[in-house]
Amino acid sequence: MLFSIEPKHSLRDIFNRKEEVSAFQKSLQSERLIVLDGLRRIGKTSLLKAVLEEFDGYHVFIDCRAYFRNNLIDVEAFDRALIKEIEKTLKLGKLKKILKSISGLSFGGFEISIEGKGQKTNLAEALKSIDETLKGKRFVLAFDEAQNLRFYRKGGKDLLNLFAYIYDNLKNFVIVLTGSEIGLLHDFLGIDDPDAPLFGRYLSEIRLQRFSKDKSLEFLRKGFEELAIDVSEKSLERVVDELDGIVGYLSIYGYIYYKEDPVNALEKTKELAKKLVEKELSALINRSTNYGYVLKAVSLHINRFNQIRTYIENNFGTISDPTLSKILNTLVKQSFLEQKYVDGVKRYLFPDPVMEYVCKE
Ligand code: ADP
Image 1: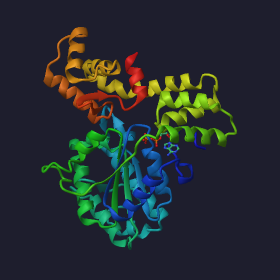
Image 2: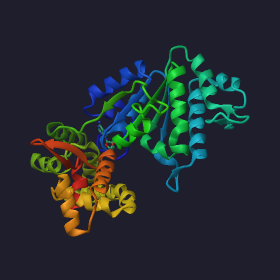
Image 3: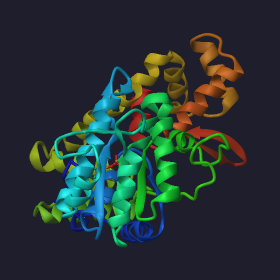
Image 4: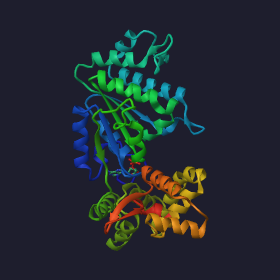
C-alpha cells in the first residue's frame, strides 16, 4: 500500500522514482562507492531496500542509528550486527563454506575484529576471502544514515579505513551509504580531504529530490484510489500546499486519513510531523540555544546573515559573526537549512515546510 508509514521494501510500492531506481541499479553494477542522499523522509531507505530486494547479488543492510549508546555508536554491538548480517547473507547465498574457510570465524561466533589487531581474524581478510569466491556477483554493504558513523570509535576512521581497503582491493564489493545530513556525510567521507582515508576515490552520488506538485497530487490520488476512498481535489491541493512534495509526510497524511480520522487528518499529520522534527532538533538546541534563535529568525523570513544577527541581538543577546557563521554552517550541513541566492543575495531557507512551521511556533 502506498500510504504505509514504514520504509517500502518492494519496487512495486515505489512511486515516481524510475530514473533514480535505474541510476542506482546501474551504479550497483559498475561503481564501488555510492551515496544516496536527500532530505529526511524523502524516500532514501525505501529506494535502497526496494532495489536491494530485487538485486541479483548479495547484500547486507545496516541501520547506523540503531547502535547508539550515550551519543556514541556502541562499537561492539555495531561490529556484531555487521558480522551477523554478513553471516546471514552468506548462509542465504549458499556461501557457507567460505565462512568455514576463514580461520577463527564460525557460525554463532564473532571472532572477527574490524581493527585486525591481536589474534582475531581481520574483517578485511574475511571480506577478501568472500570477494575471491563471488565469481562476478556483487556484494553490497549498505549503511543507512551513514553520517552517524562519525560517532564510531576514532570519529569513524577505522570504518573509513575499511571502506578504503574494500574500495582499493575487493572488486566485487560495493559500499552504499545513505544520508539525510548531506553536508555531514560528505565531510565524514572526506573524498576531498588529503588526510582522509577515502581521499580521491570516486563517489557516485544519487540525490533524491522532493516530488513536484503534480507528482505529489498524483501520489495522493493513487494512494486513495488503492483504498477506494474518494477525496476532493481541493483537499488534496491543500495537503500538498502545506506538506510540499516530501513523500514521508504525504504518506503519513494518507495513513492517518485511512486509519484514524479523515476530518482532521491534515492537522494530525502536522502534529505528528512536528513531534518528529522536534526530536531531530532537540539534540542541536540542547547543545546551544543559538540554533533555536537562528531557526526562529529564518522561520520569520529573516533570512540574510546580517538580518539574522540583528534579530538575535535585539531579542536574545549578542552573537559574534564567527559564532553565527558556525551555527548557520552546521544547520546547512545537517540539512535543516539550505543556502540559496535569491535576487543575487545569499539567503537561508527551510527545505522542509514542517520544520519551518515548527520553528515559527
Ligand atoms: P528516508 O529514508 O529518506 O528518511 P523513507 O524511505 O523512510 O525516507 O520514507 C519515508 C516514508 O515515505 C515511508 O513511509 C515510506 O513508505 C514513504 N515513501 C518513501 N518513498 C516512497 C516512494 N517512492 N513511494 C511511496 N512511498 C514512499
